[in-house]
Image (tube, rainbow, N blue to C red; front, side):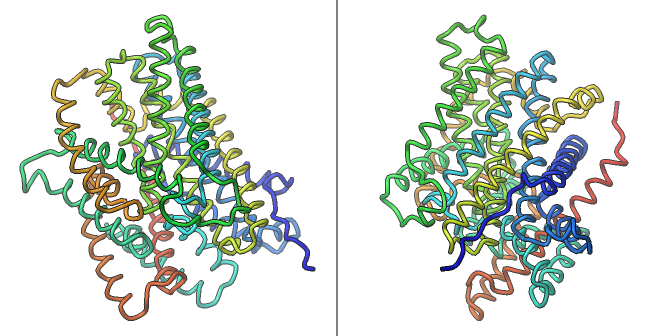
Length: 526
């Protein structure tokens, strides 16, 4: 009888020290680029390259890092620290500071960390379920896995990956979003077609129709309608009315409606704590705080699910946009300004950790053999969950120590200014009507596409991004994929998938280094 495999742990002494260094690096990368350039890069590829390079150093201490399982844990740590530190913790803290309440920044950081930890716990239970299947696309996860496998195996796989990486880097330098090409060669074709059409509609509506879609809240309304139908579809899937379970039961905990009930309760408790510590009890009373906690919990849970669905299908997750949607709804419900800023911060903290962990678990699932050994897969997911938590907590600690230096230098994530300006502008009398009008087509589109294509959610995701060049790139990449698949088929692990992973990796690395250079030489404008 073969001996059962044992998955390595991040908390082995040498691995933990290396992981802590990568977590600090990831947090710094995320905070610097989000505040100076306005983006947060996919640092998983950075960690993959570092881990592969360290594993090739001919020393006994570094030989252990030739293991793709350990490399997967290390890329999980840096990825969690990058998105967790920047998007999930620093961004909510900046909103409170800009609102004029720097005394509440530690409270907001506490709420953001609690929300992100709940994100991690929920996706651990949901990954491999019907709504977030392990076989799902998760393009960035595939790219990371292909990078690590190429480093481990070499040969033709490495050649294809390097070719794709060079093409991705050159395309990015030429202004072509080559990561979109890679995503479109991996993801669901119908979903990505809708994503591309959304990008084009948002980009060309002012010239063609004379309309600024954001000004009339069309993207937000369409996402509201599509999101409502998507949640209904998720509920049906969980009750077992659609599709088979896609992961072996032994690979991880089975997700049911009780998972969402527990998650909602956790978010409500965290939101109530933020409300009480933030002083809302004085102005709103117990009933008001309870209403705030229940609404904030719904916002957090729905935001993370929509981000997860978008990330799984397209590699993009609209965390800022979903936060803005619930901020607008909170304004319609009449929450006072302080409650609104705490709501916006709490909602924006959920989603990034959830979606990012999906990429990491997808990479691990591929590297561990696509779930063929359920016990080993379960061990790996547990180890990755620990790595996610570790990376997040290290990043949160760094944010707590350094946030004042960023904010005093007037360095804020761009969305912070948008959220605070929206609150300051006050209630728009036409807001409810605009959201309701645009919610209807979003709901219809999502219903027609069904849960597997997510047409409404992905179209709305495209509408929330101003990047028409990415739209044209998506359509061209999908056309090339269609032509090639007629001859070679569309199976996983074809050369096209490996090239796609290289395109995403090359684009991510080039974006990272150009962002670092831009941040180093940027000057604050008075």
